[in-house]
Image 1 (cartoon, rainbow, N blue to C red):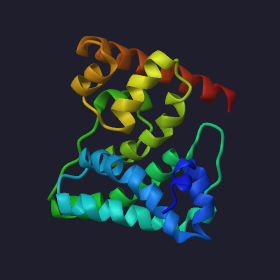
Image 2 (cartoon, helix red, strand yellow; image 1 turned 90 degrees about the vertical axis):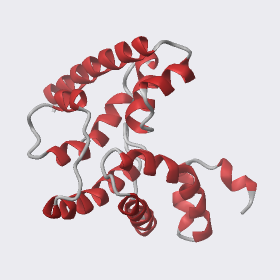
Image 3 (cartoon, one colour; image 1 turned 90 degrees about the horizontal axis):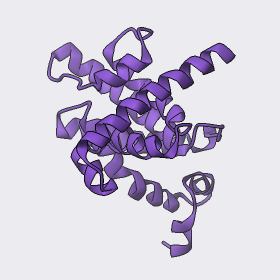
Length: 190
């Protein structure tokens, strides 16, 4: 693989994948660990996690032509939505056999409100929140992306940002308040 291709944005790679399928490896390299970390908070079985991640990549590849960039929604938010929808199918199967439970961030769910019919539907709607995170002030956006998108712990974020864990918690708390305001403003404008 040419090193020049690794400089492309995700969106550019996705456009080129139709004519150059080997370039999809760039997407896999960029997202495999992130996807695995994200789904590990939802599914507990390592085999299921690997299956969901691989199935998600297949779907992203097959739907590459359907992707269109919109304001507030990037390739990553589109890809995460596919990942979460794919994991939903596995979750439903597990729910029927009672082999696994879902771990949710209750504070984020509180921001999303009572509009969700099931706990897992709320996980799917986390992707929706990602577009709101991009509208946050930088001080909150950094911490929120690391916590909600990459699945890092308070401790990991604390070390990376050179701030205390209490500051991380405070910023996440304030970020959720800001997201709620942004969501309410968005609802009023629609």
